Image (cartoon, rainbow, N blue to C red; front, side, top):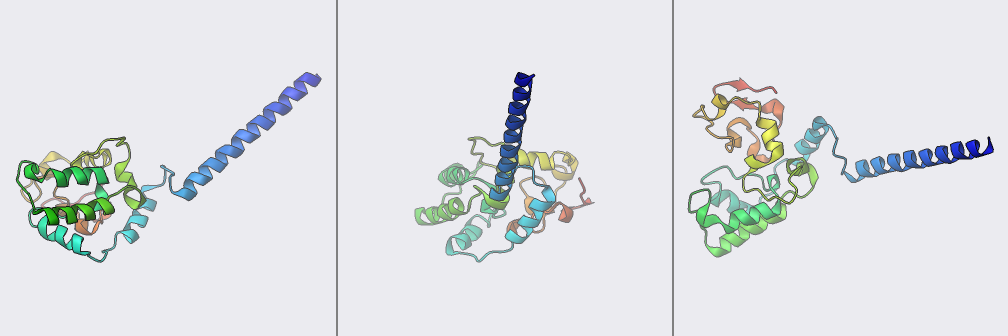
Length: 195
């Protein structure tokens, strides 16, 4: 009987310790911002305030001028630093086009993109499930694919006002400023999109 009580006491202490460490671990994760299960609404609120237009540095102005002359100047935080380095080091074959820049301009833009790239903060959700991959396209990110997988192809590829998911600013009016709120999505020729 005494052995049984000792076993029950030991089990209770062990269970209590496990619960205590579990609660402590979850609390630490939440406090440090590493808690992966925060709601999308909470993340949007954080993004909405954090993604207000920032001052344009010299490098950023160059990025907008040089890269934005051919396509939307994608917010640097949408890709990891390694991806931006690959993109900027491969401008001789930039998705089938020669987009080479003089070396000083290329280095300046690359420095801006790499230093502003997403590694943490409000865009970390974009990089979930990437592992060690460094995709060259934002449209290759698992998060991006998941958020756009229900949109019928005819609304994108069959729509001459959009034509590709890479044309973020066709449907997301605040895309160049880093705003991608689902409630503000308007697909040209279709109207508001609700998931």
